[in-house]
Amino acid sequence: MIPILDLKPQYTALQAEMDTAILAAVRSGQYINGPNVKAFEQEFARYIGVNHAVGMNSGTDALHLALRALGVGPGDEVVTVPFTFVATTEAIGIVGATPVFVDIDPVTCNMDVSQVEAVLTPRTKAILPVHLYGQSADMAPLRELADRHGLWLVEDCAQSVGATYRGQKTGTIGHVGCFSFFPSKNLGAYGDAGAAVTDDPELAARMVALRGHGGRVKYHHETLGVNSRLDEVQAAVLRVKLPHLESWNAARREVARRYDALIREAEIPGVVTPEVLADTVPVFHQYTIRVKDRDRVQKELAGRGIQTMVYYPVPLDQQAVHAHLGHGPLDFPVSARAAREVLSLPIFPEITPAQQREVVEGLKAALSLGV
Image (cartoon, rainbow, N blue to C red; front, top):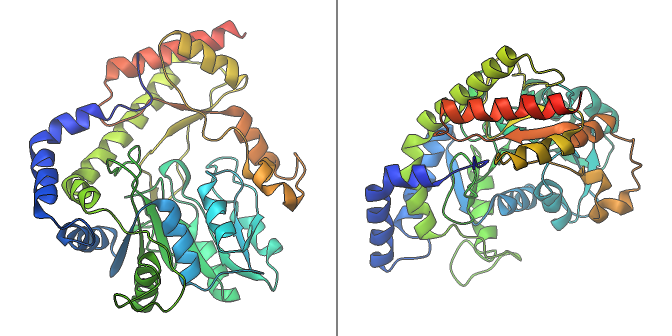
């Protein structure tokens, strides 16, 4: 069996350091807002290249509380994409705002920036691009558009930790960047965890208050907040992993290059491999190809012991939760087509060249059966 992701080799390589860090956190008796949380926030902010990082209990809450801290609420609109995980629009809905969709670029699967200005209204409060599959969206025109119209720019960096756009890490180009440390992410905790980053000290302070029941001083509550603190043990886990992130991301890029070469050499018909936006360095959270007859191909690969995943089979505009928006199945044709064709192949830093060859051989056989 070749899994889509195997986290065991990572733990084995770090076992001694990881076990020591976790045990020390447990023995400390400080489990909420302890020294590991404070240290990780500083270390992560320094790594990303911002002044402030605010730990949260998930990437979803990072998005939700960032929007709240920016004053996005009922009656407001937030421009985003339908081809992403539901957490993106979930956060918009939680604050009472309405998601306004634009389609994705057919090459990168990220926001088609050429469509954004046409959907802006007096109710638009923010633009929320998603850096899908570990590749940055085209941020320069989005920042220019946001600045010109007086809008907030919020980056969904759940899959892009360490990716860069024109030399800047994702999360530093907008007003706030939101990260997930779900276990499967390139920088993953051993449970749910997340963070929001910004250079704005007041914005950071508002997010700190919101994550801690709406107060900046204990037992003094300024607004309705939530309980969304980063766990001390998870912070300890992330501190052990963070120094290795750059090498893991480099390994993922090498895995992607090897897939590109193997697929090219195999001369497999009908496979579209990922293309990288100019002036960006992706981190390949996923290596996602496009194939017709995707569901049959996935089934054939599964029969060969090769696990693949579809991110995402149903665009958000077609999900029941957003039925009230009234979108038809062809309103966002590029997203609809991507949902029918995308297939993510196994990728993790420790995958071997032999395993990758087996994946590509299986892919060629599966597609040949359909000819």
